[in-house]
Image (cartoon, rainbow, N blue to C red; front, side, top):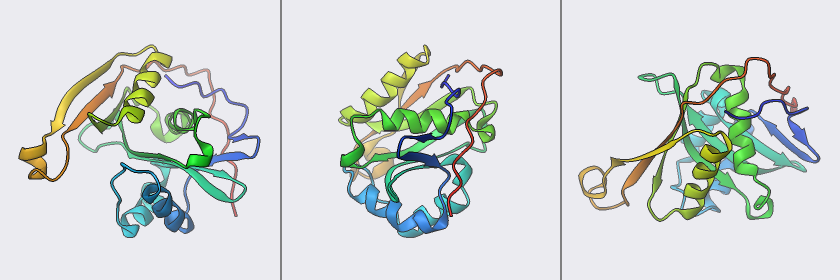
Length: 185
């Protein structure tokens, strides 16, 4: 399970926080700058920044959005946390920011009771597989891989097969506290 014993949600000039509606355009631009991520509509990103803010995180440096993780707890299985997208700007790569954002998200009170992290990844997305394999290793939890959405059956041949990565069970340490999120304006 992620270490939530950070002293603060601010690391130097980097702040991890819940998104605000005004982050929508920056999130949309960041995703567009991070192929092979699927581009969502600007409206989708606005909904994520508002309705799903408890399950998303923005990494901000010097007033600029440099990282984004969107997710949710599936209503059909609220013990899971689904990571929808992870985007890190080229200027913020190589600092384990994606892992830190996911750790931060899972450490929030809104994720209490989560036992598994799930996501989907195409076979050729080496960076995402490295991220989720690394999280499984860091958390000392198994990662199971299975086909979820098939290229022909679900995407009519227009998108590569998406494989589900399922990490867990995650161990919970009730003695650790989540850092306070830095309040934005």
